[in-house]
Length: 324
Image 1 (cartoon, helix red, strand yellow):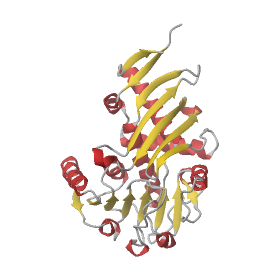
Image 2 (tube, one colour):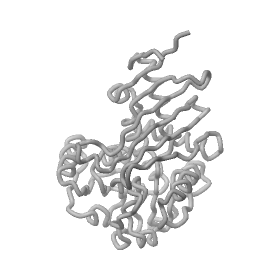
Image 3 (spheres, one colour):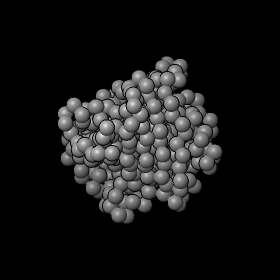
Image 4 (cartoon, one colour):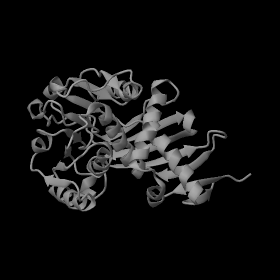
């Protein structure tokens, strides 16, 4: 019997992807499943063309959501030179009854949304609920999606944006000011200005295997919540001394990447996202705690969201059926 697969382009995915608040709620359940051993997610293998250029395979199975699949993702930090985002991805979702491929879809929107949703979910447990300002290092896709995500829970009124590429920074401030009239976006001339005295900080510069030691201890303020989605590639070793609590999304993934040469300078973690959402770890314990979330991005997030996107596309008739 001939088999078909659903193809979803980037615009198809954008049309049916859940809201940021819905993705955050979904990921809370996914990390609870992960924490209680009800998912499967091997460490993501990677191949490296250079220090700033890599491809990675991300596999996951979330039985509770009938979600199984793989994301093939590239991270090319120099793509800004070509006017392209540093991350691109393709996702295959499989049918959990037959094992057959169910859909193939662009992963750009899902990567952008689930990454920011995980950061905001961590912030729900680790940031001050009164956080009003956000500093961003790197004015790319993630700097955009993270504003959307943090606005779900936090009364953000000001964003301080830094990028080594002034044109990218100017475009970001212009675009985001138009999109969020209630938020004031400030271009700053140094990374320090994006970090110092900020309630929440996003470090979203290119991922590097060899750190460049930019973000310093003296820039950090008590009570701040710092999110690194760049594998702490831009942190000076002394910065880690300032943190009272360090969290990650998955300890197994972290240890795998440490074995590949990443994270040689970061101290041990105290908790992960699964422990936060299940209450095993209490999260922030005082207004003065300085907290770091080093989030690698894990496959259970991608495959759970992708399966939901495919469900919505099938229901609404979005996408194109292709023969296998």
